[in-house]
Amino acid sequence: MITTLSFRRLLGLSLAAVLSQAVIADEGLTPAEANTIIKEDIASTQVMAEVCPAIIGKNAKFDSNIQSLIKSYLADYSEKSMTYEKLQADAEYKSFLAESRTAAKESSKEEQKSVCDDVLNYEEE
Image 1 (cartoon, rainbow, N blue to C red):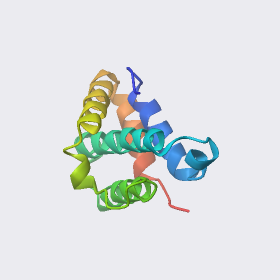
Image 2: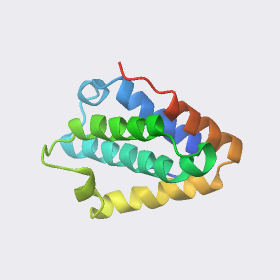
Image 3: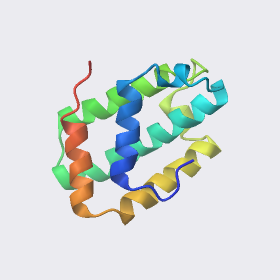
Image 4: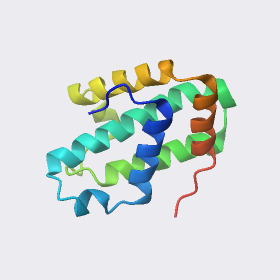
């Protein structure tokens, strides 16, 4: 569970999960544990989508990268019918989203800009 992690660390964890999709399978996590990690990653990605436009401006590439990240995370969710919209009503997801928002508020503007730039420059493999 996320506890007062920095906004930068949230992104690092999120991008690391995308870049190494086999991590969840290799660590022998249960589907419920893997789903929890995915919810945390999507929550931090949603917060980036909320925070970054005010920092880097409206940017189509950034928006596309956010959508790609969310799609990548959902592809690994055990319930294949899960959607981003359905997650918005999930109590556990709402908790992670609140924690991610708090972490973003507690981070410096420089840290936020760095995270936003990382998402903007993210290239899918």
